[in-house]
Image (cartoon, rainbow, N blue to C red; front, side, top):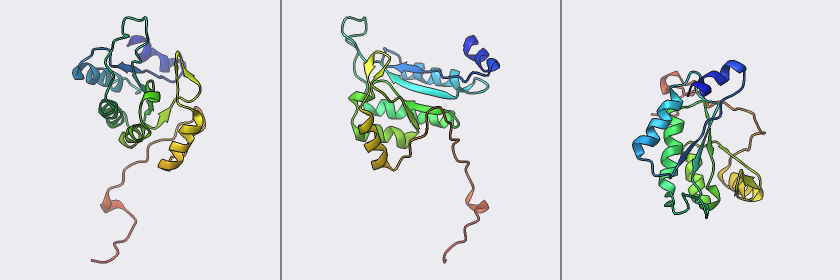
Length: 164
């Protein structure tokens, strides 16, 4: 954590990920998010990765993560780090378009695109673009940050009521 705390001093942005599905508890996952959210400043980006079991590795028998666990992690990350780019990351290739859509609706606002994510394949970029179009999501240029819109209370709104 000390290294992550020192990175912003160098004017480098912080990208700090977590990997779920390695035998951790819900409390472990929450602890990871709390640790990241209490950094000052909070990380610029937080990829939520799911372990992809690879044959011949110690975790090759790891149990797959249900989509609801991914959705919960994306939502919790968005709630406690509202200005952070929350990546729907590793293991996305094994999730349905509908499951990925739910992750975006829950708070994810970034993906890693391209043929591979380090050692495992990513979904086809054209399929991602079709999904974005279907969801009416507008892809950002790489490494640009679009801040989360600020909330406006109804009483402060400039819109007028239309009737009783």
